[in-house]
Image 1 (cartoon, rainbow, N blue to C red):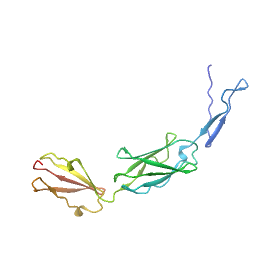
Image 2 (image 1 turned 45 degrees about the horizontal axis):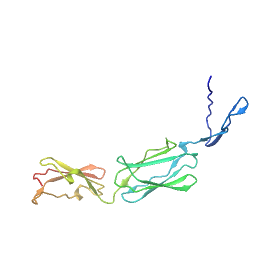
Image 3 (image 1 turned 120 degrees about the vertical axis):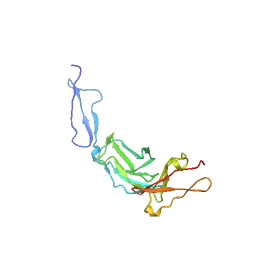
Image 4 (image 1 turned 180 degrees about the vertical axis):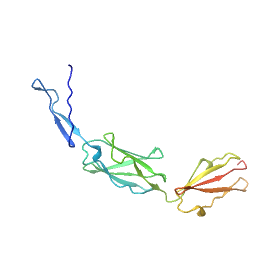
Amino acid sequence: HSGFTAEFTPREVGPHSISVEYNGHPVSGTPFIAKAYDAKRVYVGPLPQGHVGKPLQFTVDASQAGEGNLEITISAQGVNIPTQVHPQGNAKFAVSFVPIEPVDHVISIYFNKEAVPGSLFIAPVVGDFPLVTGSSLSHAPLGVDSYFTMSNVAGSLDDIEVNVEGPSGQSVPAQVKDAGGQTFKVEFCPRVVG
């Protein structure tokens, strides 16, 4: 037999001293220190609603979880957002980021590569003004229905006025449709090149 396996189950967070002897003599390196941790003891404070361009901050408390590495990733529509983690002492942290668009931001938090309770977290983010997006704002094929979206619209369909003007100043009909969630879709069909 070339080796032995010993198992133990830590019952509390913190350092556990492991002494190993062979033939009545301590083996090299003994005692070993196993640092027990519990990712379930990481607590994340409430997430306030965020606003585009304004720092959003929340807290993470790992003071009861033992020693370990905290990993925090924040993303919007699959794109990672720069994040600042400010130590507050005693394994407590203030986490902040600046939302870049009015969409839910996804926050994943891991402690020693284990997800903490509640991860993935969602931070709702709104803008302070409507955001207009879509490729048809820069180019649209002739004779094909094109559209763009308006998001973070606080009002109703009656509050939106869209004018699409062709190259000679002629009006191009545009239709605005409510897409739900403070978002509207504007459709138009270019009839002249330019």
